[in-house]
Image (spheres, rainbow, N blue to C red):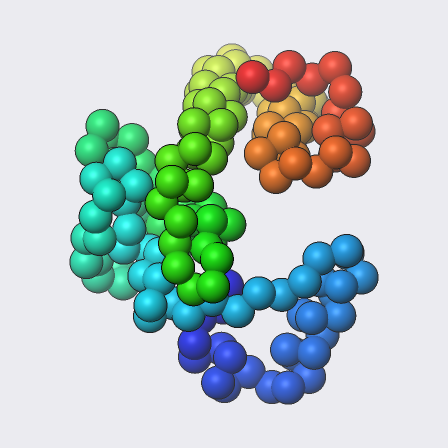
Length: 157
């Protein structure tokens, strides 16, 4: 998701490299019409588009939770078929994603509390545990089985 301007202005070599990287990883590049889908303006909880300025970097849900606008747009992009956002797929997928994100956020809050009590080498250990836990949560969200296997035994809700 680079947007229209990158497609028009990016060098052909860069586009070729991105396509090759995706293919070598077993994926592919799917171009999405960002003007038509308006992913950064959509809120699945309201089922409505809310115009935002470029300086608004957080998406605020009606329940008060926030998520970085680009991350939420990337999630929504996984639910686009033929330049149309499948809102039923968004709502179904969000239930799984929301529980994993909630776990990662609570883990981060606990880590911050713990890190305020320790210093030096112990901080690095706590930080690595948190990163491993987040990676495991994200791999479950994305369905990446190889990552899930790598972090077997890490509690993921």
